[in-house]
Length: 307
Image (cartoon, rainbow, N blue to C red; front, side, top):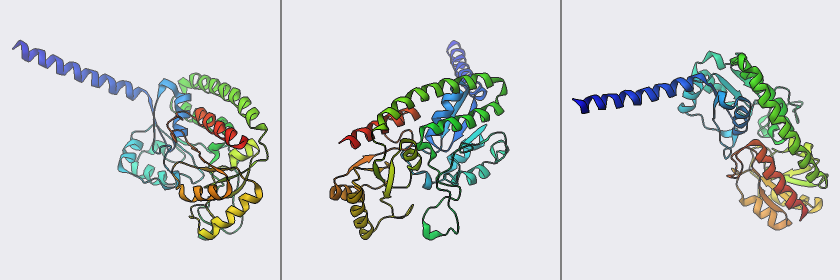
């Protein structure tokens, strides 16, 4: 009898722990983001008041994320969804509809488009058709490659969190302010390190770095892809090699999820260096935060451009 009571108490204790854990979890704001960068910034602003999950990792191409039922379940339980916007993560719209969670739909208090307030580059004009490749109607969506865009991104996140938990507004604002101080300190260093390389010509695999180039004064003179999302032909690569020789290009930037074969062939013919260049948190194991992303990439760039 004693053993049975002891066993019942143990079960009750375990259930109590599980119930307490679920209650604690429920008290936090459940946030789903479409990118690992956004997840990191939500953690910074929300700190211990949020639980965050990203639907896309840093080693995935955000253009081609495969929707999964598990994503719908996460969105169904979410208080807040934060998306990149500008059509980069269009795949999440159908998932939001499938989740049947009215609080995170477009226009609801739990919906955040992180691109609001971004100075948009390369907004297409005139007629647009499929022959142009993977063109985004609202401009180039890779705005996260400019570290100063953390300012409007975190503003949008702050406003979203405040809509969900207005009583925590000052706490969220303080966290953001402290983060922006750290960003400002790092920007002084990064600008100084990149100053001597202003005007340098670079090539990227995909058209993902115009914001980075604008911020640090680099010239993107070409891409390994002839058009966004279109693989290169041998004839195109031959023309790119000639261009790189003419422009004295030293580096080719390629995200971790793109093929290296064409890049390495071009590098061999031109003497350029291929840099595995993550554009999102988690793109390489050394990069665990948004600030670490730029620390890593700028160190890479400085070293390669100085050679």
